[in-house]
Structure formats: C-alpha cells, structure tokens
Image (cartoon, rainbow, N blue to C red; front, side, top):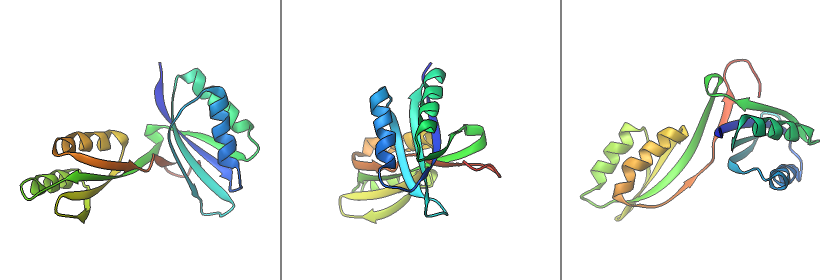
Length: 163
C-alpha cells in the first residue's frame, strides 16, 4: 500500500546536486510530492526535504538509489513519532466587509495570520502539518480562494539525532 514518506537528505552544497537527484526520480518513474532545499549551519552542506508517495519496497529502492549518488551524504526517513514536519502556505481569499470577520475568526482558530488586507481580499499565512493545512483550506474554501502557494514540507528529527 502506498503512503506518503518524508525524506531528509544531507547533500553537498554543489552545483547540479538537485539536478542529479531529480534525474534519478525521472529515470526511475518516481514522483516527488513536495521538495524543499536550504543551506544548513554549514554553508558547504544543504538539506533537502522531500515527500514521496510509495509502498515500502519502492521507498527502500528510492533510499538505496539516493545513497548511491556521490553528493548525497545521508538519507533519513523522518517518521512522525520521531520528527517534526511543517509546511508554509500563503492563501489569498475573497473577503469583503460582510465576510472578513468570519475569515479572521477561522484564521485565529488555526493560528493562521493575516499578512495583507485589501478591499476585496485577505492574504493569510499558515504553517503546520499537511492535515492541519488541509482542514484550514476546507474551512476557508467556501469564501473563495483566489490563489495559494505552498512551500513544501520541511522537517527535522527530534532530539539529538541528526538527519
């Protein structure tokens, strides 16, 4: 059975590393659901967080293939019980004088923030797990989502473990 898995890759911060990783996925027919990349505390090292949908056998193949790439230092699966994973989303929603207070009230319940206001819309910022974001978007959707952008999931292992 296919489920979503969050992988944390420690890679050398070098030109072409992301291209090699995405080429591996393309060649093997694996899909990336979400991808974030950023430098770590060491400028020569980057962290890639990716979410893939796969069964256990395919996930093991993905991890083995990633570990074979020269610039990949470490691949770790971020399991729910031992890590945190969050996503940032900006949502522009229709809002007028009649609906604005309801949208703000819903945002407060989900700890979302209003970051821009215009006569016809609000831009909301929310961070959280994909399930929290989905629940928030379901509540906001009836007001009219104009557009949104998602950062992709990023995460870290809890405690002293390094991913």
